[in-house]
Length: 465
Ligand SMILES: Nc1ncnc2c1ncn2[C@@H]1O[C@H](COP(=O)(O)OP(=O)(O)OP(=O)(O)O)[C@@H](O)[C@H]1O
Ligand SMILES: [Mg+2]
Image (cartoon, rainbow, N blue to C red; front, side):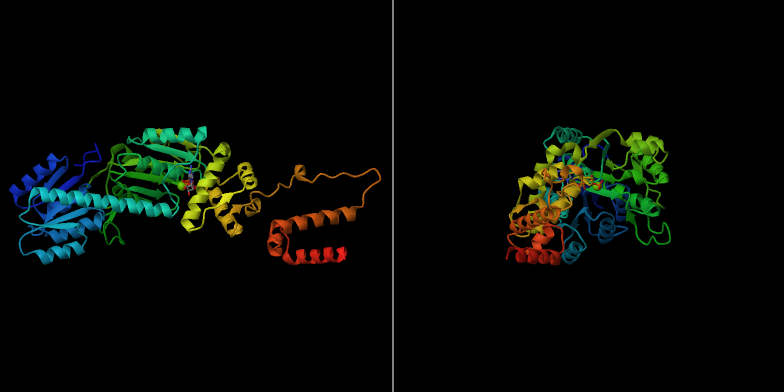
């Protein structure tokens, strides 16, 4: 059975029909604090693999019952990340090569020294770690970065403190905050700050899965469990074993599944659909929601008992407008990230534009800021500094009475048409100055049609003659 203690000591399953060899290998590995289980034949090995999760499968090629190749096939179909090492007898080299093609990490020819086996196992574990890290790095460049949480203000400092404190434990965490406030980023930071960091972080967006498929997604199924079930499918819970399961937008989970989730959280075990085996789980749950979960409980859309199970360690992410002090730092960080990702030279944000960014309401929070910067980079083209006009939706002057230009009407009265045309002229000249004389840019800046601008320019030139 899976121990739910320290998730950093690797679990090994040795499949070997030579009982003496099997026991001496097991003893050697246990001495190195590996958790070891053994199986004397292929059938029992497959059974064990279905019941719980291992890091390493060390299997002999020739076995009674199912042979090593079949054990490898079935194991890899269930757990693609499982490290499989094959031990072979003399003359089995061609088979061993075949096993590597099927996904074995390494093979070792009998008789072998225990030390040699241990070195090879350690190397395979390192390789898998490296694979996971590069997978995480790829995710990072896909926009779901898990690096530093930016923000020096008191609100973010508190969030960081909470995330760092809860990281090392298995405690369930509930992250609440508006859309785009960084809930997923915090979940990743917690996972990466935990002893589970070398195991998978599996994310499920509850809002993106149709209710009818959700149970299958979470728990998987056995072959033949229903008409379309032609293959065994490992559910997300199993995939996350020894790691972390991130349940995003938990508030949208249908009520019947909430009941099933509650049972799994209480019992820490699950079964595949159509299966009879109970799978022990050592999974840390982090849930996130952008709806107020307590209000959903009040309205009967979310089970109260599940709410308490999840809300063991709550973290609230403040909206961006509640921590405007972080905007300059965040904007600079995000701009640098986008430029690096796009292979662009580093740019700066002009002070005037930054003022606009700090004053804005940001209903879409950090994600909206990121999008606005991306758009500004396009509008800013070759310029080294991003200007307010590169953020047209954000730095636009509000159409309120406060923003009207100051006017004065002298005692003797004013010439309305003359004043309006002077104001128009001043705007057009300033627009052209800011666009280095480029008329199309000036038209964009002034939010007017290019043809209108040209027409007005012509009139101005005619009047000057
Ligand atoms: N404090 C932060 N520092 C750096 N980047 C951040 C921060 N907060 C959010 N981001 C970035 O903003 C974007 C949105 O963050 P994330 O996806 O974590 O938000 P979310 O709260 O999960 O949103 P939703 O509720 O819409 O799923 C991501 O690209 C993330 O990297
Ligand atoms: Mg999210």
